[in-house]
Structure formats: C-alpha cells, structure tokens
Length: 192
Image 1 (tube, helix red, strand yellow):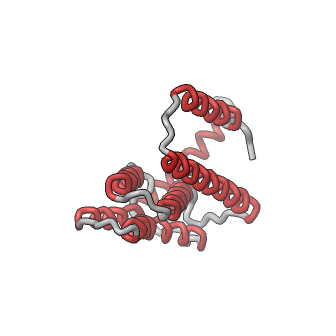
Image 2 (spheres, rainbow, N blue to C red; image 1 turned 30 degrees about the vertical axis):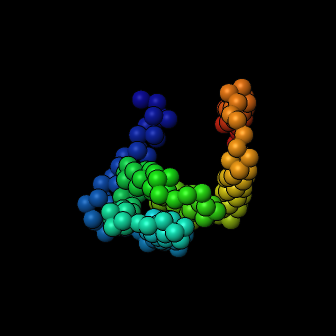
Image 3 (cartoon, one colour; image 1 turned 90 degrees about the vertical axis):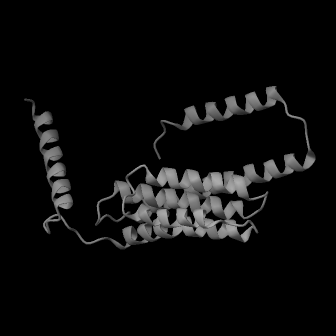
C-alpha cells in the first residue's frame, strides 16, 4: 500500500470512528457548539415560520395543514442532512405559488429561504466547534448579496414585463436561457 492511501485510510478511519462515537452518544466525541453554529441552527429553526409569516402578511389565508408544515420545519434542526429540508422548502415554495398573488413580500421570503439554505449547508458541512474566519464569511456574504440583488432584478423585470402584457418570444427566451447556461459554465470552475 502506498503512503498516500495509508494516510487517506487513516483519516477516513478517524472520521468514521468520531461519527460512530457521536451516534453512540459517548462523551468523547462531543464538542462544544460554536456561536456561529448556534446562530445557524436558530436560522434553520426560525426559517419556515418566518416564511409563513411573510406569506400570511400578503393577506393570503393559511389553513392549519400548512401551519403543520411549519411544525415539520422544526424537525429540520434535528436532521438537516436529510432530504427533509429540500421537501419542506419545495412545499413552502409551492404554497407561495398557489396561495399568494403578486406581492413585493416575495423578496424578503426569498431572502429567508436563501439564508435558511446557507445555514443548513453550514450545519451539515461543519463540525460542531467550527468557526469561519472573517475573510471567508465576507466572501460568502458578498456572494449572498449578489444572489439577492439578482433575485430583486429578476423580480422587477418580471413585474415590469407582466404589467406591459407583452407577447412572448421563443427566440428571445431561448437566447436568454443559452446566455445564462453559458455564463454558468464559464464561472463554474473558477476559484474565489
């Protein structure tokens, strides 16, 4: 066995042993939770409820079944690395599309969904005592602001186009989709 494979196997064994210890409840693997991770858990916990509060603020009536979805959202904290976050947020997005008319509160709701997604990704990928240095946090804050700015721009353009009642154009739509795909492929492999 080469040295590189041996080191990789040793690291994997250490990781698996620590994961098994965490699942078994031994005190050896428990590490104190960092303040950043506690904030991420709070964002995950409050995200679905904040989203539903924004939906209710649009004047749309919510049934008790959808409020049960917020309670299911509380389970996201227990299992953020499962398929549950995806299902809850897909259901919440579908709910907004079914219930709410065009309203500007969709923008803060999109921000809540994005922040919940980022918090879930952080919780799943980070060890309990992880802290992110300021430079990396600043980089990701900048990226988050860019995504939110693009969301606002697309919403404003969609609102403007829907108000004008313009006829659709297959050529224009196809060229825009090709442009977006080309841009995504060009920036996909770039490092920060």
